[in-house]
Every structure is written in C-alpha cells, then in structure tokens.
Image (cartoon, rainbow, N blue to C red):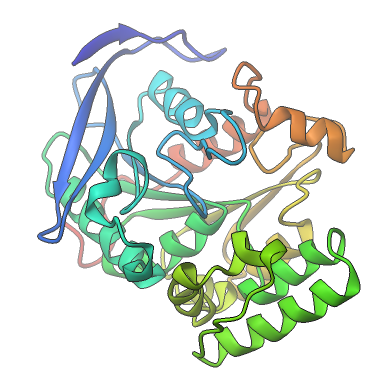
Length: 319
C-alpha cells in the first residue's frame, strides 16, 4: 500500500492518492488489479480501465510491443483530477495468468463477464460515486458489451475499432504480408468466422492464428463493435487519434454513426498508445517502447470535460 502525492495537471488541484492492490475472486480464478483512490470529502467517480488485445497488461504494456505505460499514465491523470480508477490484468495475462493458463479456454465473452464482475464490485463499494467504463483498443469492444450489464454512468472508447475483427486485421495485414500469406490469412479468418478451427497454419502466421488462440478469435469474430456500441444507452465518448496506425478515424466515425448521441473527439497527431507522434511508422513504433513520453494533452482535456459534465445521479436502475 502506497500513499503518494501525484503532481497536479495544469489548472487542477493536487489530490493525495492512495494506491493499493485489488483482487477479484471470480470463482474460476483470481484476477489482480491496481486501485488509485484520490483523497477528498466526497466519494469520487471511479473509472474501470479495460486493456486491449493480446497479452496487454493493466498498465497498457505488451511484452511483444514494449513498455509505454499508456493505461498507467491514464489512471494517474484521472487520479490527479479527483477520479478513482481500477486497472486490471485480464484472465490469463501477467499477474492474472493463473486464472486462465490455457489460452484455448479464453474467450472475449469471458473477458466481458470478468469486466462486468469488476464493475459490479466497484458499484457496490461505498467509497465511489458513479462508474465510468473506459476501454482501449479491443478493450473498447469489451467495455461496450459489458456496459448494459453494469449500471455504469458512462462509457469511453479510446482507439476502438468500428469494424469486425477480420476486416480490421486484413487491412493491417495488406501492408505487411506477401499475396500468398495474405490469401491464406483471409481463408483462415473465413473459417474462424464460421466457427471452424484450422489445424494447418503457415509458420509465419502462427503468432496470429496458432491453434491454441483460435477459440478466442472465434469468440471475437462473433461480435461487431458497431452493433455493440449502438446497444449502449448511456452517455458515451469516442476518442481517436489521427496518427493511429492500428485503428483509423473512419472507425471512430462508424461508431459515432451507430450512436449519434455519443461525443466524438479526433485528436490530431495522437497514435494508438495515446502519444503525439509523427505519422511515420518508424517514429510510431519507437513510441511504443517509450514510457517517458507524456499522454496527448487533448486526450485528458476531452476525457475530464466529459466526466465532469455527467449527471451526478446514477442511471435508471442504478444504485
């Protein structure tokens, strides 16, 4: 347990922030997270941060992509401005590995269920007022699917796809794979979309389509991010960077079209890990392993303004 004073963001008062571990016993394994709780007389809002795809941990770091601390920095930004947060390692990832050691048993629906359980724990905690779900990348889809079951006051999607996973992945692969491997990827994705696994995967594609991850991909392909976002009935904010090389502005616009009452903010120069960078791929990739870089300032401005404008009472049916 650590009590520290985080430096204030410009224009906001400093808050003494308590950092402590928080665990969730799901009945099928224990998940581990980090709670940041700012001091104050009134219960603060609390944000549940949902990380993106693959082995991305609670801090936004991926062993295949380096250390950027994007979600850790986002949690600290919220804490400096009087907003509590919980970020957690998903089942099978980092400290929560033992809750899902066999990736063949992992599914997007399981991640949604875990997110709902975390959210309900936070909503039942008298230390907090309203709950905000914040999902980044694939976490945006998880948070969107979880939102109707949580009684959350609001949803924030950051760098969330506006297309089914196979369409998004094929666009990314067109820039990287020779035609034979691209065609094979398309065939594998078609089979997975139809609920069929593929035993024969070319070695260069094993990192994406290894047999043990295919059940997860089948569960992911069963959900359309646009349909999930359209079903959300609470206030929502879409945040998207113009220099994101993984998800584009068109994705954010598709989400906005699906839920016209959502707020949309396009942040000029921001990339997928929430930093301001040049548009070039090499500069982008360098930032993925540069935890010292600050978050895009405009990201924080839009996020804090959105949360501040939320009604103080919980949504209908809430606590």
